[in-house]
Each structure stands twice: as structure tokens, then as C-alpha cells.
Image: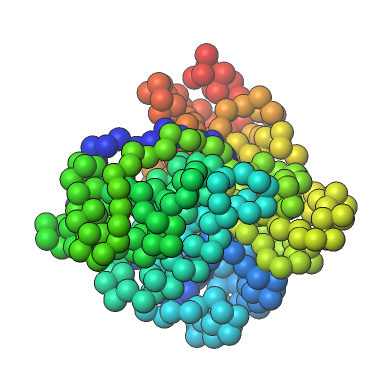
Length: 419
């Protein structure tokens, strides 16, 4: 989903964590009701053609066969059979998807998926992705980052602004990059290293305060205080910088269709079947890019662009969303039943049925199987949360209005809460 949101408040709210971060990875699997779950970090959402085939093969052989996209452009493989962890790690490692066993869960790097493809933005930030990944994996301190800590690389169009990243690097017109936290301009060549230093500053600040936190916002530090800590660290490491407020540009994620020298498709509820993945990988010339909005961008360099319309039609026929007016762009959901024991119902089935009745005029919705609301996106979405006794609680966070309903009455409940 591609709704842009306003910037977060400059005053953070402290959070106290009473346990360690159990976020899954490739080496640390999570036991779900539908089998074990692995989360594979893909910096920038980038997969080469060979890596995409290897990932699909692993999902078919060891899991439920599907590729599950996350809201950070990563992938989950679900339904893994017992005892296959070593085999999965070996397969993904051979494909180059596990470059560091010590840092594999902290390689959360989102990047503008259309960078260098559509003429948008102010510079192609894709070279920053491997540079940041290498600097991150080389940092001993960074091993202590939470699996939820997020880096975002924005090519200047502002599409990363709504992700709520812990460290953001945004390309600036005229050269250089804006870094947050820090609110400074640094040289483009220094941007990846500066991003890692900002993350290390967060870890040091948390340690100094005895705070068990996973994200920058959880420290509870005013934005200016955190900025000063980052600036001091940059100075100590010899990285030049000038104070610079965050650019105000806000933009949405890529719409489905042919965009510049690429195809863009949306994946309903982020779940790609084995057949759909095969169709996608057959379209890939060099790489594919998974987006934080549960979409896929396929660059079509050179002569491959001539067959873009035909390729897009094949992807649409496979069940992927190619129409920018599709109502699927405004609907998200957690895994729900039967995959999650905490969920009260099969929210994905209910979301699909309700979408038929709501049609193209409905507001953005996020369906959750319980009050934890896993995977909930940032932005102005209405919440549809399953209740233990049955039915749903429908609420509008912006207005504070809410109502209780069952899935068959969702359209009428929407009309009442948004009128």
C-alpha cells in the first residue's frame, strides 16, 4: 500500500523492553502454527535472477511453496518442515543471501525501488545499498542492533519518508545526502558509513541510559538531543557535515504498470504463489526489487523494454495486480488463522470477501487477527481488528471513532464510521 504519512513527532516516547528481541531470521526460525518461519533480509529488496530462483526453490522444497513479502521489502518463507534449518541456511548461503551469520538479522535496508529507472529522485542510490550493507556487517557494535531496526535510503523523491526508519539517508539536489537522526548534510561518498555511525550512536545512547530498546524512537530522547549525539560522533570520526533540516518532500510507492524502464506489480496481501514467483523470475533480466508496499519492480534494461506490455499482461494473468486503480492497493492483513495461534480468525479470507463488496471506493484498511496488529503499516489506515468473541472492531485512528461489526457488514460499518 502506498499512502504517504506526515513525519513523526520530534518528541519520542520511551519504551521499556523486558525481554530480548525474538525477531526471526534465516538462522533463528520462529515456530508458527503453520510450521517454522524464516525471515530473509534482502538489502534494498534486491534479488538477482539466480537468487530469486534459489529462494523460490527453497520455498517449494522446504516450506509452503509461497514467497511472503514483508513491509520492509524482505521475504518470509513459511510452513518450513521440522529440522530443515541447516538445509535452508546452506541453500540461501550458496545463493549469496547469507553473507554474514553474525549480522543476518540486522541487515534491514529499504531503498527507493524505482531509483535509476524512471527519472525520478535526484540520484541513483542503488550503489549505497551494498556499501551500507558491507559497512553494517563490518561493524562489531552493529551486531547488537534489533532485528526491527531499519535503515532507509531515499533517492530524493521522498518515498522512504513514510516508513518510520531509524536511520534515513536522503539524496539532496546539488549533491550530498541528508542524514537522520542528526539532521545534517554529509558528502554522498560518506553516506553509508555515516548511517552506520548513527546506528552505533543509538546503541551507545541506549547503553549509557541502561535502556532495553529496539528502535530509536523508543529511547525517548528529544530529536535535537539525539541529533547532537550523532553530530558529535560524525565529528569524532572525521566525517564533515553541516546542519540541515529534513527536506519536506513526501511521495508514495510505485504504482502498478509500466514505469520508466521497469514493470511494477502489487502482490495481494503480500503472498506470491509458486506459480506467480516462477512467472516473475521468468521476466527478470538482471534483478527484481521487492518494495516495502508488498510490490515487485522488475527492471527491463535495453531491448527487454520492448516487450514490457506483453510481460505485464502475463503477470496480470497470473493474478498479480497490474492496474493502478485496483482496490487491492488499499488492503493489507496479517497472516491470521491458520498460520498464527494468536489470531482469532482467518482475516485474509474475510478481507478478500469484504473487498468484493467494498469495491474501488473504500478507504485504506488493515486487517489484524488480534490486538497485536503485526505488520501494521504506518499511515492513515482504518483498523479492522478481530475480536476474541467473534466479529471485528473497526476504528479510525484519525478521528477516534470505532464500531463493532461482523465481516458481512463491513461496507455499511465503513460508511457509518467515515461519514
